[in-house]
Image (cartoon, rainbow, N blue to C red; front, side, top):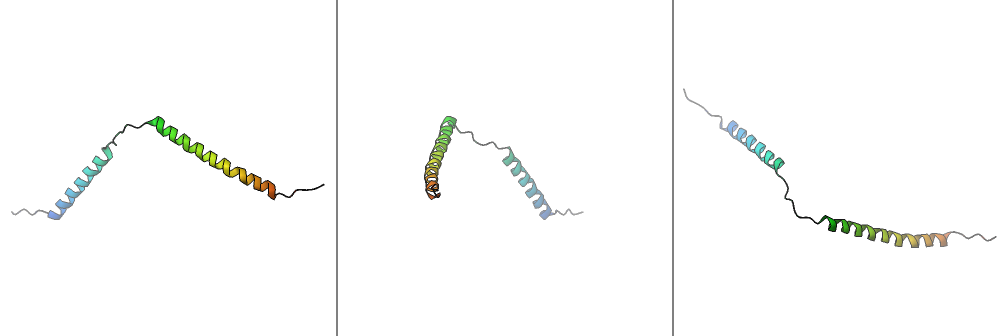
Length: 76
């Protein structure tokens, strides 16, 4: 009796197995841990925050002055 092989089905099964193994490898990989200077990063954020607040206060002062000038003065 002759044996027939289902070549297409075999290729599909191999592809599924390879995909599954590739997914498992991706899920189990760990990122490379780099030497990071945490204090420098914190200082950078603090500098950005200080610059932002300084810019906001500079923008707020002229706006308040303009609002005070635009307000009608009542004479009694």
